[in-house]
Length: 140
Image (cartoon, rainbow, N blue to C red):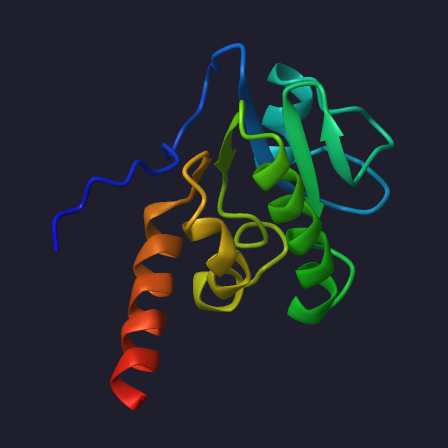
């Protein structure tokens, strides 16, 4: 299959005016490390705000429990991204750094985002989503 998808770059240092940096956070909004620190230092993330849009960033909490506690926040993000179609969202490998999850645990949460033209996902997430979709198709 030809791959014409665009992925989230591994290192984002600047954004266009309509671009949003999507990062993993904690509920307290203490953006001290990883992508959260980049969001705070460069893209308007607000100290003390651990959820949702802020500046040119969007926080998804990942430090409060298991994957099941992250899913509602990812679903809220996907709903917003589908409405804010004038923006391009660059999703980082949320939850896969300091929070300690594996890509295989987090990527499936973004399955619906895969189909949105304005959401860029990490290549590792895309590969997992494609593999999961192919397996479902084979099982039918």
